[in-house]
Structure formats: structure tokens, C-alpha cells
Image (tube, rainbow, N blue to C red):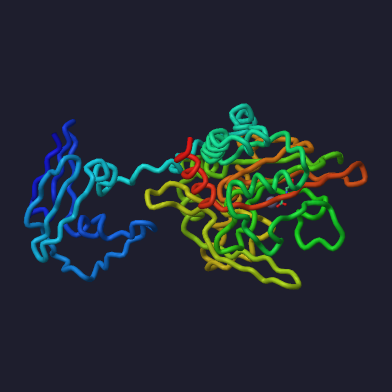
Amino acid sequence: MTSATIRADAGAVRVAWPDGDQADFPFLWLRDNCPSGFHPETRERQFDLLSVASDIRPASVAREGETLAVTWAADGHVSRFPVAWLRRHRPGRPAPDPAAVAPITWRGDGARTALPQADAAGLMADDARLRDWLVATKRLGLGLVTGIADGEAGSEALARRVGFLRETNFGVDFTVVSKPDPNNLAYTAERLPLHTDLPNQELAPGFQFLHCLANEAAGGGSLLCDGFAVAEDLRRSDPAAFDLLARVTVPFRFQDGEYDIRHRATVLRLDEAGAVAEVRFSPHLADSFDMPAAVVADYYAAYRRFMRLTRDPAYVLTLRLTGGEMMVFDNRRVLHGRDAFDPSTGHRHLHGFYVDRGEVDSRIRVLSRRV
Ligand code: OGA
Ligand code: ZN
């Protein structure tokens, strides 16, 4: 049977489950999470943390069936916690989250067969299929959609089914064709070396949905590279270079007649556990480095090392998209690029959207409730 005891010395209530597992719940944490403090419909917290003293303590704790009742000494308020809820929310352990998908890194063309691939109609019609494909796409940072029958409307409908489209200075959506007066190298027929899009934005766009409507010109193949794989390998092979890329910020900038959008950040961003959480890398949007002169040579060495790895066939996945296919990738992880193409030999037309990481996560969670 689940038991609960007040441990005044630790400032916590110790809950012990029948299987031997136990956890300490600090007094103030319990009061702050009392179910009575949340609006019954919105589920948002209404409890005012400053309405109680920081040294609040219980007078008693008691089991009431599957609930733990904590009676507070100061005002006699009773907090009732479902025991199962406490188990899922013990301090020091993140609550279960269907969108907490650990990345699996991949390297080179060998990853091709592992890529999640799904038919557009199935993703539109079937919640379970969309959920599974989103989870798999998030895990590798890359997934494919085939059979988009209805042109731009088809990929837009799918992107909107996942989440809000992220508008940028290129619009709510963007058309990648070679065109006169380009404001971006993507809108030429030039080779695009591996990059992440819009690192010059404070928050670089999350997932990119890049739909191929036609790819009939000579050239124009796609290149992809898992930036997490490159970064983790660099951490092992050249820790000093990794450290520079994770520590020294550099400026990124896009400018045209209407916009001048700049952001300063590191090429690699680590999460609080030290794992690589984000890659910002774009030779065409990197502004002039402005670190102290004494750091420049070492920084360039590290940056070139990273850049060289992103082009190493051991890391690069080559794909040739054809009309009706779409690649979806985490633009804050997976670098993408393309070979130059010859517009005189045929039409090449891609159409893209961005959907931020948080939208993808939300969709995974909500679909997981239903399936
Ligand atoms: C872009 C881009 C790739 C391609 O538009 O940012 O990288 O295949 N396009 O044209
Ligand atoms: Zn791009």
C-alpha cells in the first residue's frame, strides 16, 4: 500500500509506493501544486504563491483511497492529490510526455532506408499514422511524404494539419524557383551548400516542409546532413573545436530592400544536460565574424572543420525529390542544400512552409490522446 510520512527535517512529504519506489515532495511544491489552485476548466494555476509563507508545513497527511490528503498547519487548508498523479510528477523527474522523443543520429546515404516515409492521403486521414510519422520524423529530424496529389494545396493542408505556419520575411509560404532579381541564393540556380534556414532569426524556424512540384532540370539534387551527428562526432574528435562552436557567438544577417534581420548566436547550442539541441549554420547568412582577433584563427579552424564534416559523404544523404514528394526536416538540426541546376533543361519548382518545433510537439501530444 502507498504510504506517506512527513519528514520535517527534509521539509518534504515522503511517499512510498508498494513496489518499493519512493519520492520526497517538498512542502512548498505540494502547496503550489494543490489541485484546488487550478481553474477547473482552463487548468491554469490561479493559486498565488505569495499568499503562503515559504516555510509552509503540513499538520498531517492521510491516505484517502487513491488520494493523499495534506492538511496545512497555518490555515487548515486540505490539499488532495491523486496518488497516481504524484507518481507521475515526482520532483527531479520530468513528467511523461509523448513528444519527448530522443533524437537518433544518422550518417550518410545509409540512412535512406531508415527514413520515415508516408503517403500524404494517409497522413491527412489517419490520426495514428500522422502521430507515428511525426514521432519518427522528430526522432531522425527528417521524414518523407509521397503522393501529394493536389499541388501546393496538398502540402499546405498537411502542414496546417500539423500546426500553425510560421510566417517569415519570405512569407507564410515560399516558392523556390530560379527567378529574376533574387533576394536569396535559393531563388537562383546556384548550388546551395549545406545550411540551416534563417539562422538570422532570433528563433530559427523549426520544421521545414519542402514540397517538390517539379524537378526536371539537370542537377538540383537535394543534400541533407544530420547536424547533431556531425556535432557529436566533432565533440569526440576535436573537443576544443566543439567548445568554440558552442561558446563563441557569431552574427547572422539577412538584408534586402525591406528587411534587415540580425541575430547573434553560437553555431551549436547545448541543452542543460550538455546535449546538442540546436545547430545554426549558413555560409550565406553568416555575417562577418566579429570575435576578438586573438580568437579568429582558432574559430575559423573549428568552423572549417565543422563545415568540412557537413560535406563529407560519410555524413551526407543525397536524395532526388520528384514531383509530389516532400521532405520534412528539423531546420534547427538537419542541414540541407542542393546541387546547382540548369534551368534551360527543365522546370524546377519547390514550395515550402515552416512549422515550429513546439507546434509539432503539440500535435504529437494531442494525437496521442486520441489514438
Ligand atoms: C531553400 C533551400 C533547397 C532546394 O530554399 O532555403 O535550401 O532544393 N532550397 O532548392
Ligand atoms: Zn534552405
